[in-house]
Length: 340
Image 1 (cartoon, one colour):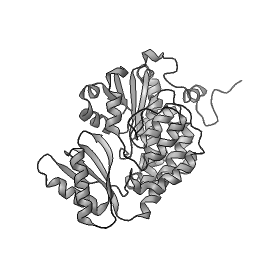
Image 2: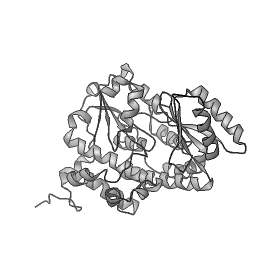
Image 3: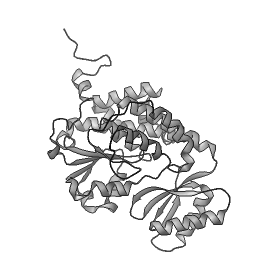
Image 4: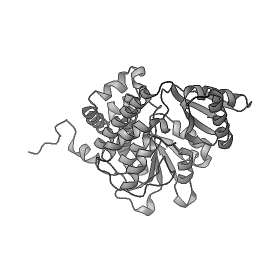
């Protein structure tokens, strides 16, 4: 008699579903949903507790990821400690796997919605989850890339001391660039700062030399009411030229991994537009480490009337992308749900 279970105890039916695109049987004209994947900073101890308890498909993703990573990822996201989970080396794989595990549960509970997926996007590391979802790479290769990415970014932060990120609000881009220049000149030396994340209108994250960032925050706050500026609990100048060593390290693996043309539209952090083919993906994922995340521009593209989208789904963990969508497009925000 043929066994009804796989070697890891997963029913064959569940195993097969892990390799099925939910939109595979949906006509292009009927696809009208955009699925969004979160980035680093959304990790929280216990974020996958319900998934691991109730979804066999989610459990197998964690099992497969742990075998690649060399440690028990499910144990880490369940029991922490939070201090370890917050480290780049661990937070990136944790968010990547958890967000895709939410999708596996949604294949069963929200199939009518995600089965109409037309496009996908992800914030920073979330872009890798979006590409896995779009069949541009396998889950296993996605885990390998995320692990290599996290290790490369961590190593790059050790090459230059005293770098970080700052959250800036209420300042237009022209003024912000001017203030970055003023802060750089005031501090002197070789330190630099850059706009790293275009999150929503007048909502930016800047990365670079910590002294320049501290001076930048001071200058922003001097502008008066309605302005905000604070250093973030991040130890690296992510999405700037400071990450050049990380780009070179990750690029070596990207050149080896099999990448395919996506089977749905996927938006790029680097350009704010769509990936055209596999070669384009390989090229822009390298650049993503040293160039800003253009999330606002990506969501402006996703919400254009020409695409005819009727709903947006954030996969979790967290609700940061929905919060940003409220500042980008209120109509899209009203049509957005979070898988939590």
